[in-house]
Image (tube, rainbow, N blue to C red; front, side, top):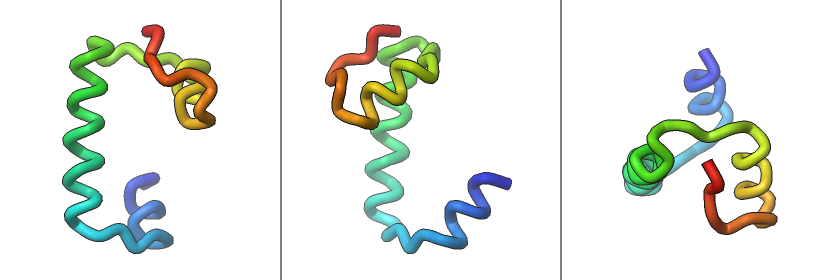
Length: 53
């Protein structure tokens, strides 16, 4: 459901979507799929350039 809402309200070019997907896969592998909310908030706000998970 969240994906459909995000897709409906954002116009994301397919090449950007492919780059984002590749980055998500790379980050998931780097963190073994374990990312807590605090780490995500820090990263998204530029407070921490490295995942601590």
